[in-house]
Image 1 (tube, rainbow, N blue to C red):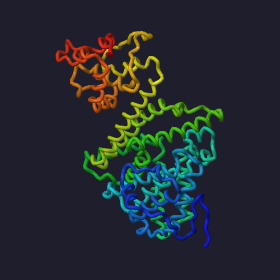
Image 2 (image 1 turned 60 degrees about the vertical axis):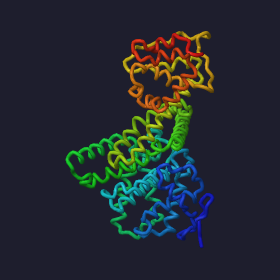
Image 3 (image 1 turned 30 degrees about the vertical axis):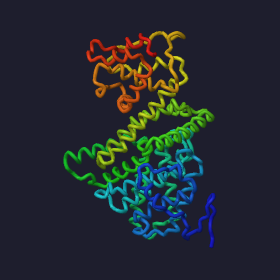
Image 4 (image 1 turned 30 degrees about the horizontal axis):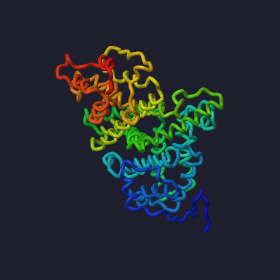
Length: 459
């Protein structure tokens, strides 16, 4: 019996390999939106989850897939993914995106639109969408005129490379040979289209087109899929959504994905500097938590939340938790940003006042900072971000607290959700007569922020 060696696991060619058993707990994790990808380390464990997704959904049986060949394909795919040791674009990312598609299919979100072969293609596209990733962006590949950029004429360089690599592996290990040639061609056509849809350069075009299609369907009461192009658009949109699930998970998972991609971007900046080519400006400083937190917060707001609002409009409000997670994560990143921004600042205790001014307020210049007027406080009792939230609530004392607004609704929401905690901090640190003045029912007698900063704040 012949075989081949793959890192720390041994695979027998064209024979079934004994994969680890999928437990009931594993099944529950696969059906959860917060699948803990980072706990999967060994190659066989990774293959186990992928193999299970295809098998439990019936693809292995209905497409008459030879399990031994499929396992060999998966292990070669895993090797291609992990050969660069990328922090982000690795086989764990492939598993995470595949699991998102598996979750969608398990929830039967697309049954009325897609057939069995379409669903297989979604999962297969997710699995191979970043195979053999270089760990660099398309812009970088074009800038250095890499072999890949030249081969693919500077257009969706990496995405074309991923699709090409995936089907080269499939030719070598064709686990789909028992289905018809036409079915294989259909899988290839849609798979390539899906993978090309993950190019972020196409994000705006794809999301706008799909949103227009959704709106037209509701208004005119027509079918969402009326042509092959409509189906390609839908499938591409779904895979694009699955590729960007990280920010919609619980913060523990979202943060890990963010730190990984920032590490990969930082490595690219180092390469750009070594090669003497223009440094990608938006990738600078991503080894600093203050910059990471601000960038991720903006990315979540500008790209992820609008994308998932469209997706929820498509699949239904039952899955609104995805957007809620994203909003919660924006709050967490903004909290981290403020903490990092002011933690080493001598005058940080006053700088946060700019975050407390409501829309329409005249610009306010805090008093000059010197050794005699810096408020004393214990870092263990209250940090700058918390104090900033307290000041924000002070500013809004002219209106009911629940109606408070700010220039950033996530900041306002954070205050609302934690108002009891911040009131307690304020009460324990400020003079009682100041609290009474702030809570004065008569708005004309109520103290404002200009008066507050002129008082002695603390007991």
